[in-house]
Amino acid sequence: MKDRALRYRKEIPTAVLDTACLRMLTLIDKVQQHRKPGTKANYQQHHQLAQRLAAESIVLLKNEDNLLPLQPEKQRSIAVLGKPAQEPVIQGSGCATTVPYMLDRPLDEIFDVAGHDFDIHYAIGAPQDNFIDEQAQAHAVEVARNAEVAVIFVSTAIGEDGENGDRKDLNILPSHEALIRAVAKQQPNLVVVLANSDAVVMPWLPDCKALLETFFAGQGMGRAVADILFGRANPCGKLTVTVPNTLEETPAWLSYPGENLRHHYSEGLFVGYRYYDRRHLTPQFPFGFGLSYTTFSYANLMTSVTQLEVDHSLTVSVEVTNSGNVAGKEVVQLYLSAPSGELLREKRALKAFAKVELEPGETKTVSMLLNWQDFACFHPGMNEWVVDSGEYQLHAARSSRDIVISTRVKVLAPPYYPPLKADNSLQQLINNPPAFDRVVKLLVSKNNLPEPMVREKLIAIAPDLFCGLFIALTEFLAIDITREELASALAGH
Image 1 (cartoon, rainbow, N blue to C red):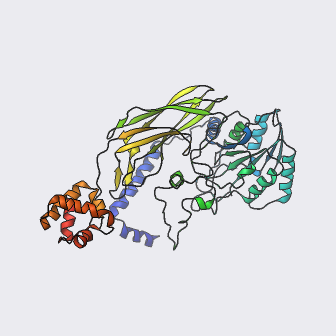
Image 2 (spheres, rainbow, N blue to C red; image 1 turned 90 degrees about the vertical axis):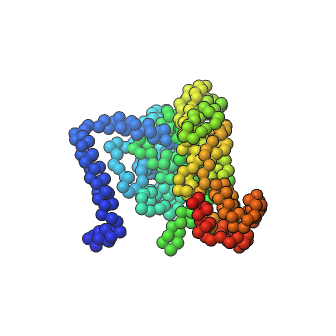
Image 3 (cartoon, helix red, strand yellow; image 1 turned 120 degrees about the vertical axis):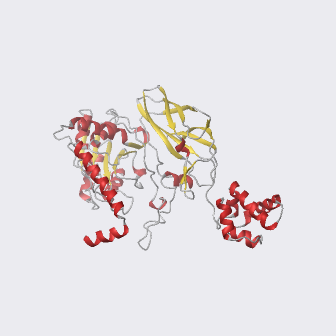
Protein backbone atom coordinates (compact mmCIF):
# COMPACT_ATOMS: atom_id res chain seq x y z
CA MET A 1 0.00 0.00 0.00
CA LYS A 2 2.86 2.39 0.84
CA ASP A 3 4.54 1.72 -2.52
CA ARG A 4 1.28 2.31 -4.35
CA ALA A 5 0.73 5.57 -2.48
CA LEU A 6 4.23 6.70 -3.37
CA ARG A 7 3.66 5.94 -7.03
CA TYR A 8 0.42 7.88 -7.00
CA ARG A 9 2.10 10.83 -5.32
CA LYS A 10 4.57 11.01 -8.18
CA GLU A 11 1.72 11.26 -10.66
CA ILE A 12 -0.65 13.50 -8.71
CA PRO A 13 0.48 16.83 -7.22
CA THR A 14 0.19 17.12 -3.45
CA ALA A 15 -2.13 20.10 -3.82
CA VAL A 16 -4.60 18.00 -5.80
CA LEU A 17 -4.54 15.27 -3.15
CA ASP A 18 -5.08 17.89 -0.43
CA THR A 19 -8.09 19.27 -2.30
CA ALA A 20 -9.61 15.80 -2.66
CA CYS A 21 -9.07 15.06 1.03
CA LEU A 22 -10.55 18.41 2.02
CA ARG A 23 -13.71 17.62 0.08
CA MET A 24 -14.11 14.31 1.89
CA LEU A 25 -13.50 15.93 5.29
CA THR A 26 -16.02 18.66 4.46
CA LEU A 27 -18.60 16.02 3.56
CA ILE A 28 -17.95 14.14 6.81
CA ASP A 29 -18.34 17.37 8.77
CA LYS A 30 -21.67 18.13 7.09
CA VAL A 31 -22.94 14.63 7.82
CA GLN A 32 -22.01 14.98 11.47
CA GLN A 33 -23.75 18.35 11.72
CA HIS A 34 -26.98 17.00 10.28
CA ARG A 35 -27.15 13.68 12.10
CA LYS A 36 -30.52 12.96 13.65
CA PRO A 37 -30.01 10.16 16.17
CA GLY A 38 -33.13 8.51 17.44
CA THR A 39 -35.25 9.58 14.46
CA LYS A 40 -38.35 7.44 14.18
CA ALA A 41 -39.51 6.46 10.71
CA ASN A 42 -43.03 5.48 9.75
CA TYR A 43 -42.19 2.29 7.89
CA GLN A 44 -45.83 1.60 7.06
CA GLN A 45 -46.10 4.90 5.19
CA HIS A 46 -42.79 4.18 3.50
CA HIS A 47 -44.12 0.82 2.34
CA GLN A 48 -47.33 2.34 1.02
CA LEU A 49 -45.21 4.78 -0.98
CA ALA A 50 -43.15 1.87 -2.34
CA GLN A 51 -46.35 0.13 -3.43
CA ARG A 52 -47.59 3.24 -5.20
CA LEU A 53 -44.27 3.84 -6.94
CA ALA A 54 -44.20 0.23 -8.13
CA ALA A 55 -47.75 0.46 -9.49
CA GLU A 56 -46.86 3.70 -11.32
CA SER A 57 -43.72 2.21 -12.92
CA ILE A 58 -44.80 -1.28 -14.01
CA VAL A 59 -45.22 -1.46 -17.79
CA LEU A 60 -47.99 -3.34 -19.57
CA LEU A 61 -46.31 -4.51 -22.79
CA LYS A 62 -49.00 -6.79 -24.20
CA ASN A 63 -52.71 -7.29 -23.58
CA GLU A 64 -54.15 -9.37 -26.38
CA ASP A 65 -57.95 -9.69 -26.39
CA ASN A 66 -57.99 -7.40 -23.32
CA LEU A 67 -57.18 -10.38 -21.13
CA LEU A 68 -56.30 -7.97 -18.32
CA PRO A 69 -57.65 -6.91 -15.95
CA LEU A 70 -58.87 -10.28 -14.72
CA GLN A 71 -62.60 -10.40 -14.06
CA PRO A 72 -64.52 -13.12 -12.16
CA GLU A 73 -67.24 -13.33 -14.78
CA LYS A 74 -64.59 -14.20 -17.40
CA GLN A 75 -61.73 -15.95 -15.58
CA ARG A 76 -62.81 -17.16 -12.17
CA SER A 77 -60.20 -19.94 -11.96
CA ILE A 78 -56.57 -18.71 -11.91
CA ALA A 79 -53.32 -20.68 -11.89
CA VAL A 80 -50.40 -18.77 -10.37
CA LEU A 81 -47.06 -20.30 -11.35
CA GLY A 82 -43.36 -19.68 -10.75
CA LYS A 83 -41.09 -19.40 -7.75
CA PRO A 84 -40.89 -15.57 -8.01
CA ALA A 85 -44.58 -15.50 -7.03
CA GLN A 86 -43.46 -16.62 -3.57
CA GLU A 87 -39.94 -15.18 -3.56
CA PRO A 88 -40.18 -12.00 -5.63
CA VAL A 89 -37.18 -10.69 -7.54
CA ILE A 90 -37.20 -7.01 -6.59
CA GLN A 91 -33.57 -5.89 -6.93
CA GLY A 92 -30.22 -6.77 -8.41
CA SER A 93 -27.00 -7.84 -6.73
CA GLY A 94 -24.05 -5.91 -5.36
CA CYS A 95 -23.80 -2.74 -3.33
CA ALA A 96 -27.33 -1.64 -4.23
CA THR A 97 -28.83 -4.67 -2.49
CA THR A 98 -30.94 -3.74 0.53
CA VAL A 99 -32.98 -5.62 3.10
CA PRO A 100 -36.47 -4.11 3.02
CA TYR A 101 -38.32 -3.56 6.26
CA MET A 102 -41.44 -4.94 4.60
CA LEU A 103 -41.88 -7.14 1.53
CA ASP A 104 -44.99 -8.01 -0.45
CA ARG A 105 -45.12 -11.55 -1.79
CA PRO A 106 -47.09 -11.52 -5.06
CA LEU A 107 -48.93 -14.76 -4.25
CA ASP A 108 -50.14 -13.43 -0.88
CA GLU A 109 -51.24 -10.16 -2.45
CA ILE A 110 -53.08 -11.97 -5.25
CA PHE A 111 -55.05 -13.96 -2.69
CA ASP A 112 -55.75 -10.78 -0.72
CA VAL A 113 -56.92 -8.69 -3.68
CA ALA A 114 -58.86 -11.51 -5.34
CA GLY A 115 -60.80 -12.31 -2.18
CA HIS A 116 -63.60 -14.83 -2.69
CA ASP A 117 -64.29 -13.77 -6.27
CA PHE A 118 -61.64 -16.06 -7.75
CA ASP A 119 -60.49 -19.65 -7.32
CA ILE A 120 -56.68 -19.53 -7.17
CA HIS A 121 -54.20 -22.43 -7.29
CA TYR A 122 -50.40 -22.24 -7.09
CA ALA A 123 -47.58 -24.39 -8.44
CA ILE A 124 -43.87 -23.60 -8.36
CA GLY A 125 -43.30 -24.87 -11.91
CA ALA A 126 -39.58 -24.11 -12.10
CA PRO A 127 -36.68 -23.41 -9.73
CA GLN A 128 -34.85 -20.10 -9.64
CA ASP A 129 -31.90 -21.45 -11.63
CA ASN A 130 -31.03 -23.00 -15.00
CA PHE A 131 -32.18 -26.47 -14.00
CA ILE A 132 -35.46 -27.67 -15.53
CA ASP A 133 -37.42 -29.69 -13.00
CA GLU A 134 -39.61 -31.78 -15.29
CA GLN A 135 -41.81 -33.04 -12.46
CA ALA A 136 -42.48 -29.54 -11.13
CA GLN A 137 -43.08 -28.30 -14.66
CA ALA A 138 -45.56 -31.09 -15.40
CA HIS A 139 -47.46 -30.32 -12.21
CA ALA A 140 -47.63 -26.61 -13.14
CA VAL A 141 -48.91 -27.47 -16.61
CA GLU A 142 -51.65 -29.61 -15.06
CA VAL A 143 -52.68 -26.79 -12.69
CA ALA A 144 -52.74 -24.36 -15.62
CA ARG A 145 -54.78 -26.75 -17.80
CA ASN A 146 -57.51 -26.88 -15.18
CA ALA A 147 -57.71 -23.10 -14.83
CA GLU A 148 -59.24 -20.44 -17.06
CA VAL A 149 -56.12 -18.27 -17.00
CA ALA A 150 -52.51 -18.78 -15.91
CA VAL A 151 -50.19 -16.12 -14.46
CA ILE A 152 -46.49 -17.05 -14.62
CA PHE A 153 -43.82 -15.12 -12.71
CA VAL A 154 -40.41 -15.28 -14.40
CA SER A 155 -37.07 -13.52 -14.08
CA THR A 156 -33.47 -13.32 -15.21
CA ALA A 157 -30.73 -15.11 -13.26
CA ILE A 158 -30.30 -13.75 -9.74
CA GLY A 159 -26.78 -12.51 -9.08
CA GLU A 160 -25.96 -11.57 -12.66
CA ASP A 161 -27.63 -8.16 -12.55
CA GLY A 162 -25.12 -6.13 -10.57
CA GLU A 163 -22.03 -3.98 -10.82
CA ASN A 164 -18.55 -5.13 -11.87
CA GLY A 165 -19.90 -7.55 -14.43
CA ASP A 166 -22.12 -7.94 -17.46
CA ARG A 167 -24.90 -10.35 -18.28
CA LYS A 168 -23.80 -13.22 -20.48
CA ASP A 169 -26.92 -12.89 -22.62
CA LEU A 170 -30.30 -11.16 -22.72
CA ASN A 171 -32.39 -14.22 -21.85
CA ILE A 172 -34.64 -14.99 -18.93
CA LEU A 173 -33.80 -18.17 -17.02
CA PRO A 174 -33.98 -21.23 -19.32
CA SER A 175 -36.19 -23.02 -16.80
CA HIS A 176 -38.62 -20.10 -16.84
CA GLU A 177 -38.73 -19.95 -20.61
CA ALA A 178 -39.36 -23.69 -20.74
CA LEU A 179 -42.23 -23.26 -18.26
CA ILE A 180 -43.82 -20.55 -20.44
CA ARG A 181 -43.66 -22.71 -23.55
CA ALA A 182 -44.97 -25.83 -21.79
CA VAL A 183 -47.91 -24.02 -20.17
CA ALA A 184 -48.80 -22.17 -23.39
CA LYS A 185 -49.40 -25.49 -25.14
CA GLN A 186 -52.21 -26.25 -22.67
CA GLN A 187 -53.44 -22.82 -21.59
CA PRO A 188 -53.94 -20.09 -24.21
CA ASN A 189 -54.89 -17.44 -21.64
CA LEU A 190 -51.39 -16.85 -20.35
CA VAL A 191 -50.12 -13.80 -18.45
CA VAL A 192 -46.37 -13.39 -17.91
CA VAL A 193 -45.01 -11.19 -15.11
CA LEU A 194 -41.37 -10.38 -15.78
CA ALA A 195 -38.68 -9.23 -13.29
CA ASN A 196 -35.31 -8.12 -14.69
CA SER A 197 -32.76 -5.33 -14.55
CA ASP A 198 -32.86 -4.30 -18.18
CA ALA A 199 -34.10 -5.39 -21.58
CA VAL A 200 -34.42 -9.10 -22.36
CA VAL A 201 -35.09 -10.86 -25.64
CA MET A 202 -38.51 -12.46 -25.84
CA PRO A 203 -38.68 -15.36 -28.30
CA TRP A 204 -41.52 -16.67 -26.10
CA LEU A 205 -43.64 -13.51 -26.56
CA PRO A 206 -46.11 -15.14 -29.00
CA ASP A 207 -46.86 -17.77 -26.34
CA CYS A 208 -48.49 -15.28 -23.94
CA LYS A 209 -51.51 -13.03 -24.30
CA ALA A 210 -50.45 -10.47 -21.69
CA LEU A 211 -47.08 -9.31 -20.41
CA LEU A 212 -46.26 -7.17 -17.38
CA GLU A 213 -42.72 -5.78 -17.19
CA THR A 214 -41.87 -4.95 -13.56
CA PHE A 215 -38.08 -4.55 -13.87
CA PHE A 216 -36.80 -4.35 -10.27
CA ALA A 217 -39.83 -2.74 -8.67
CA GLY A 218 -38.82 -2.90 -5.02
CA GLN A 219 -40.52 -4.09 -1.88
CA GLY A 220 -44.03 -3.05 -2.95
CA MET A 221 -43.93 -4.94 -6.24
CA GLY A 222 -46.15 -7.81 -5.08
CA ARG A 223 -49.08 -5.59 -4.16
CA ALA A 224 -48.64 -3.45 -7.26
CA VAL A 225 -48.77 -6.48 -9.56
CA ALA A 226 -51.90 -7.80 -7.81
CA ASP A 227 -53.63 -4.42 -8.09
CA ILE A 228 -52.83 -4.23 -11.81
CA LEU A 229 -53.85 -7.83 -12.52
CA PHE A 230 -57.30 -7.26 -11.03
CA GLY A 231 -57.83 -3.70 -12.23
CA ARG A 232 -57.48 -1.88 -8.94
CA ALA A 233 -54.63 0.03 -10.57
CA ASN A 234 -54.37 1.01 -14.21
CA PRO A 235 -50.83 0.46 -15.57
CA CYS A 236 -49.17 3.68 -16.66
CA GLY A 237 -45.44 2.90 -16.77
CA LYS A 238 -43.39 3.42 -19.92
CA LEU A 239 -40.27 1.60 -21.06
CA THR A 240 -37.00 3.31 -20.15
CA VAL A 241 -35.14 1.00 -22.52
CA THR A 242 -35.55 -0.38 -26.02
CA VAL A 243 -36.38 -4.09 -26.11
CA PRO A 244 -34.54 -5.72 -29.06
CA ASN A 245 -35.70 -8.70 -31.07
CA THR A 246 -32.32 -10.40 -30.73
CA LEU A 247 -29.01 -9.83 -28.98
CA GLU A 248 -27.35 -9.33 -32.37
CA GLU A 249 -29.62 -6.34 -33.00
CA THR A 250 -28.19 -4.29 -30.13
CA PRO A 251 -25.93 -1.26 -30.83
CA ALA A 252 -22.77 -2.69 -29.25
CA TRP A 253 -22.98 -6.16 -30.77
CA LEU A 254 -19.95 -5.72 -33.06
CA SER A 255 -17.77 -3.86 -30.56
CA TYR A 256 -18.44 -5.62 -27.24
CA PRO A 257 -16.40 -6.83 -25.38
CA GLY A 258 -13.57 -5.49 -27.53
CA GLU A 259 -10.20 -7.12 -27.99
CA ASN A 260 -6.71 -7.06 -26.53
CA LEU A 261 -8.18 -6.04 -23.15
CA ARG A 262 -9.54 -2.86 -24.67
CA HIS A 263 -13.20 -2.02 -25.03
CA HIS A 264 -14.29 0.26 -27.86
CA TYR A 265 -17.25 2.54 -27.21
CA SER A 266 -18.16 2.79 -30.85
CA GLU A 267 -21.85 3.71 -30.64
CA GLY A 268 -21.18 7.41 -30.16
CA LEU A 269 -24.43 9.31 -29.94
CA PHE A 270 -26.45 6.37 -31.19
CA VAL A 271 -27.19 4.39 -28.07
CA GLY A 272 -30.62 3.07 -27.13
CA TYR A 273 -33.56 4.22 -29.21
CA ARG A 274 -31.36 6.64 -31.20
CA TYR A 275 -29.59 3.66 -32.78
CA TYR A 276 -32.79 1.90 -33.79
CA ASP A 277 -34.29 5.11 -35.16
CA ARG A 278 -31.22 5.97 -37.19
CA ARG A 279 -31.00 2.50 -38.71
CA HIS A 280 -34.76 2.24 -39.27
CA LEU A 281 -34.92 -0.96 -37.23
CA THR A 282 -38.16 -2.07 -35.66
CA PRO A 283 -37.44 -3.36 -32.13
CA GLN A 284 -39.60 -5.76 -30.16
CA PHE A 285 -40.82 -2.83 -28.06
CA PRO A 286 -39.66 0.78 -28.54
CA PHE A 287 -38.37 3.13 -25.87
CA GLY A 288 -41.22 4.90 -24.08
CA PHE A 289 -43.80 2.21 -24.92
CA GLY A 290 -46.46 1.18 -22.44
CA LEU A 291 -50.12 0.17 -22.64
CA SER A 292 -53.07 1.10 -20.44
CA TYR A 293 -56.54 -0.26 -19.72
CA THR A 294 -57.86 2.91 -21.37
CA THR A 295 -56.94 4.96 -24.45
CA PHE A 296 -55.76 8.53 -24.94
CA SER A 297 -55.95 11.01 -27.80
CA TYR A 298 -53.81 14.11 -28.40
CA ALA A 299 -54.73 17.41 -30.05
CA ASN A 300 -53.65 21.04 -30.47
CA LEU A 301 -49.88 20.87 -30.03
CA MET A 302 -48.75 24.47 -29.60
CA THR A 303 -45.63 26.46 -28.67
CA SER A 304 -45.54 29.71 -26.69
CA VAL A 305 -43.34 31.26 -29.40
CA THR A 306 -42.77 30.42 -33.06
CA GLN A 307 -39.22 31.77 -33.05
CA LEU A 308 -36.66 31.07 -30.32
CA GLU A 309 -33.74 33.38 -29.63
CA VAL A 310 -30.50 32.87 -27.71
CA ASP A 311 -30.86 31.87 -24.04
CA HIS A 312 -34.65 32.05 -24.19
CA SER A 313 -37.08 29.22 -23.47
CA LEU A 314 -40.42 28.09 -24.79
CA THR A 315 -43.41 26.20 -23.45
CA VAL A 316 -44.92 23.35 -25.44
CA SER A 317 -48.53 22.41 -24.70
CA VAL A 318 -50.81 19.65 -25.94
CA GLU A 319 -54.38 18.62 -25.10
CA VAL A 320 -54.75 15.03 -23.90
CA THR A 321 -58.13 13.29 -23.66
CA ASN A 322 -59.01 10.02 -21.98
CA SER A 323 -60.99 8.43 -24.80
CA GLY A 324 -61.60 5.16 -22.94
CA ASN A 325 -63.98 3.94 -20.27
CA VAL A 326 -61.79 3.89 -17.14
CA ALA A 327 -59.61 6.43 -15.36
CA GLY A 328 -55.94 6.31 -16.21
CA LYS A 329 -52.64 8.14 -16.46
CA GLU A 330 -50.74 8.94 -19.64
CA VAL A 331 -47.07 9.87 -19.98
CA VAL A 332 -46.81 12.46 -22.76
CA GLN A 333 -43.35 12.42 -24.35
CA LEU A 334 -41.83 15.36 -26.20
CA TYR A 335 -39.19 14.60 -28.84
CA LEU A 336 -37.06 17.07 -30.80
CA SER A 337 -35.75 16.72 -34.38
CA ALA A 338 -32.91 19.06 -35.33
CA PRO A 339 -32.26 20.44 -38.82
CA SER A 340 -29.38 19.04 -40.86
CA GLY A 341 -26.06 20.61 -39.95
CA GLU A 342 -22.36 19.98 -39.59
CA LEU A 343 -22.82 17.48 -36.77
CA LEU A 344 -24.51 14.10 -37.02
CA ARG A 345 -27.68 14.21 -34.91
CA GLU A 346 -30.24 11.69 -33.74
CA LYS A 347 -33.47 11.38 -35.70
CA ARG A 348 -35.43 12.31 -32.58
CA ALA A 349 -34.33 13.04 -29.02
CA LEU A 350 -36.50 12.92 -25.92
CA LYS A 351 -36.44 16.37 -24.31
CA ALA A 352 -39.33 16.34 -21.83
CA PHE A 353 -42.19 14.22 -20.54
CA ALA A 354 -45.13 14.66 -18.19
CA LYS A 355 -47.69 12.35 -16.61
CA VAL A 356 -51.34 13.37 -16.49
CA GLU A 357 -54.26 11.64 -14.75
CA LEU A 358 -57.63 11.70 -16.52
CA GLU A 359 -61.13 10.44 -15.86
CA PRO A 360 -63.05 8.91 -18.79
CA GLY A 361 -63.86 11.65 -21.31
CA GLU A 362 -61.78 14.24 -19.47
CA THR A 363 -59.37 16.56 -21.31
CA LYS A 364 -56.38 18.37 -19.82
CA THR A 365 -53.66 20.57 -21.27
CA VAL A 366 -50.16 19.24 -20.61
CA SER A 367 -47.34 21.79 -20.71
CA MET A 368 -43.60 21.18 -20.89
CA LEU A 369 -40.75 23.69 -20.78
CA LEU A 370 -37.81 23.62 -23.18
CA ASN A 371 -34.73 25.73 -22.42
CA TRP A 372 -32.09 26.93 -24.86
CA GLN A 373 -29.79 24.10 -23.76
CA ASP A 374 -32.39 21.54 -24.89
CA PHE A 375 -31.63 22.52 -28.49
CA ALA A 376 -27.85 22.21 -28.07
CA CYS A 377 -25.52 19.40 -29.05
CA PHE A 378 -21.90 18.83 -28.13
CA HIS A 379 -19.28 19.78 -30.69
CA PRO A 380 -16.15 17.66 -30.13
CA GLY A 381 -14.03 19.90 -32.33
CA MET A 382 -14.86 22.94 -30.21
CA ASN A 383 -15.23 21.06 -26.92
CA GLU A 384 -18.43 22.92 -26.14
CA TRP A 385 -22.19 22.85 -26.63
CA VAL A 386 -23.55 24.58 -29.73
CA VAL A 387 -26.97 25.32 -31.19
CA ASP A 388 -27.68 25.25 -34.92
CA SER A 389 -29.99 27.80 -36.47
CA GLY A 390 -32.91 26.46 -38.43
CA GLU A 391 -36.31 24.86 -38.18
CA TYR A 392 -36.76 22.25 -35.46
CA GLN A 393 -39.60 19.76 -35.24
CA LEU A 394 -41.35 19.04 -31.94
CA HIS A 395 -43.26 15.77 -31.56
CA ALA A 396 -45.81 14.83 -28.91
CA ALA A 397 -45.64 11.05 -28.68
CA ARG A 398 -46.76 7.94 -26.82
CA SER A 399 -43.33 6.38 -27.40
CA SER A 400 -40.21 7.00 -29.45
CA ARG A 401 -41.98 5.35 -32.40
CA ASP A 402 -45.58 6.46 -31.83
CA ILE A 403 -45.54 10.09 -32.88
CA VAL A 404 -49.05 11.48 -32.50
CA ILE A 405 -48.79 15.15 -33.44
CA SER A 406 -45.97 17.48 -34.51
CA THR A 407 -45.21 21.18 -34.91
CA ARG A 408 -42.24 23.38 -35.80
CA VAL A 409 -40.27 26.20 -34.22
CA LYS A 410 -37.57 28.39 -35.77
CA VAL A 411 -34.36 28.77 -33.78
CA LEU A 412 -32.06 31.75 -34.27
CA ALA A 413 -28.57 30.93 -33.04
CA PRO A 414 -25.26 32.73 -33.57
CA PRO A 415 -22.90 31.06 -36.04
CA TYR A 416 -20.06 29.00 -34.63
CA TYR A 417 -16.80 28.12 -36.28
CA PRO A 418 -14.64 25.21 -35.12
CA PRO A 419 -10.89 25.89 -35.05
CA LEU A 420 -9.13 24.87 -38.25
CA LYS A 421 -5.71 23.35 -38.87
CA ALA A 422 -3.59 22.69 -41.92
CA ASP A 423 -4.94 19.16 -42.26
CA ASN A 424 -8.59 20.22 -42.36
CA SER A 425 -10.32 19.94 -45.73
CA LEU A 426 -10.86 22.78 -48.15
CA GLN A 427 -14.62 22.36 -47.78
CA GLN A 428 -14.32 22.83 -44.03
CA LEU A 429 -12.46 26.06 -44.70
CA ILE A 430 -15.19 27.30 -47.03
CA ASN A 431 -17.79 26.50 -44.37
CA ASN A 432 -15.95 28.88 -42.03
CA PRO A 433 -16.42 32.31 -43.72
CA PRO A 434 -14.12 34.37 -41.42
CA ALA A 435 -11.24 31.90 -41.83
CA PHE A 436 -11.98 31.55 -45.57
CA ASP A 437 -11.71 35.33 -46.01
CA ARG A 438 -8.34 35.41 -44.24
CA VAL A 439 -6.89 32.54 -46.28
CA VAL A 440 -8.13 34.06 -49.54
CA LYS A 441 -6.39 37.33 -48.67
CA LEU A 442 -3.21 35.38 -47.92
CA LEU A 443 -3.37 33.63 -51.31
CA VAL A 444 -4.06 36.90 -53.17
CA SER A 445 -1.00 38.45 -51.54
CA LYS A 446 1.09 35.53 -52.75
CA ASN A 447 0.07 35.32 -56.41
CA ASN A 448 -1.46 38.73 -57.31
CA LEU A 449 -4.61 37.08 -58.72
CA PRO A 450 -8.01 38.82 -58.38
CA GLU A 451 -9.76 37.85 -55.17
CA PRO A 452 -13.04 36.73 -56.89
CA MET A 453 -11.04 34.36 -59.11
CA VAL A 454 -9.31 32.80 -56.10
CA ARG A 455 -12.63 32.31 -54.33
CA GLU A 456 -14.29 30.73 -57.36
CA LYS A 457 -11.35 28.40 -57.93
CA LEU A 458 -11.32 27.20 -54.33
CA ILE A 459 -15.08 26.65 -54.24
CA ALA A 460 -14.98 24.77 -57.56
CA ILE A 461 -12.30 22.26 -56.58
CA ALA A 462 -13.34 21.74 -52.92
CA PRO A 463 -15.87 18.89 -53.47
CA ASP A 464 -13.27 16.75 -55.27
CA LEU A 465 -10.43 17.12 -52.75
CA PHE A 466 -9.97 14.85 -49.78
CA CYS A 467 -6.48 15.98 -48.80
CA GLY A 468 -5.63 18.58 -46.18
CA LEU A 469 -5.57 22.32 -46.75
CA PHE A 470 -1.82 22.74 -46.95
CA ILE A 471 -1.43 20.05 -49.61
CA ALA A 472 -4.45 21.34 -51.54
CA LEU A 473 -3.06 24.87 -51.69
CA THR A 474 0.59 24.06 -52.30
CA GLU A 475 0.31 20.99 -54.54
CA PHE A 476 -2.95 21.41 -56.46
CA LEU A 477 -2.85 25.22 -56.71
CA ALA A 478 0.96 25.53 -56.61
CA ILE A 479 0.84 28.46 -54.20
CA ASP A 480 4.05 29.14 -52.32
CA ILE A 481 3.05 29.44 -48.67
CA THR A 482 4.46 27.98 -45.49
CA ARG A 483 2.61 25.97 -42.85
CA GLU A 484 3.25 28.79 -40.41
CA GLU A 485 1.61 31.34 -42.70
CA LEU A 486 -1.41 29.12 -43.22
CA ALA A 487 -1.73 28.39 -39.51
CA SER A 488 -1.59 32.12 -38.72
CA ALA A 489 -4.32 32.90 -41.25
CA LEU A 490 -6.54 30.09 -39.96
CA ALA A 491 -6.14 31.28 -36.37
CA GLY A 492 -6.74 34.93 -37.29
CA HIS A 493 -3.34 36.15 -36.11
